[in-house]
Length: 162
Picture 1 (tube, rainbow, N blue to C red):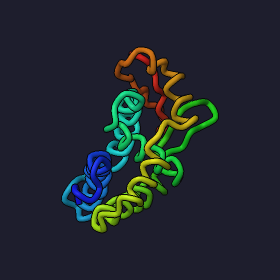
Picture 2 (cartoon, one colour; picture 1 turned 180 degrees about the horizontal axis):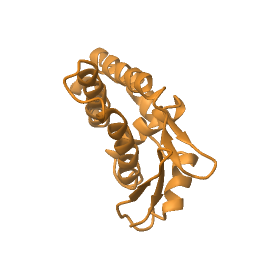
Picture 3 (cartoon, one colour; picture 1 turned 30 degrees about the horizontal axis):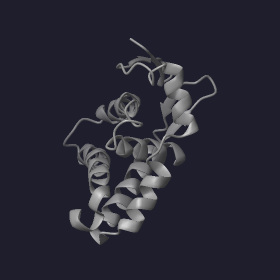
Picture 4 (tube, helix red, strand yellow; picture 1 turned 90 degrees about the vertical axis):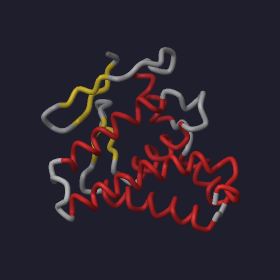
């Protein structure tokens, strides 16, 4: 697989590790091996972590994997951008979105399909207007710093500089 995917291997492997990890956690929760209380916190934490990692997207190839995940989940309705600039996790859609991205990456890797890997990363592993607006709002692009999520009672996340 690494040989077939060449320079694309690293980004796909990192994305797979993250997204399949979420699938596995959800599987363990469904099997009652982990508490159900983890469901919301793991997805919300992932969303906040996306923004922290996306800061380097213009500088670091490995950040393509984070953009891939974020853009896929946003397109599938698992991440919701609200008119007030906040984001939330759509818990009705996130499980299917995680599973579909896991399936896509695993299939590409199993087939060693470099063309499909390249297409997936070109389509989703990039800075989008929505992503840039969110990062600009944080003024993170110029000064890479961690973010401080503020959790509201309605499960929205307001991202601010610490």
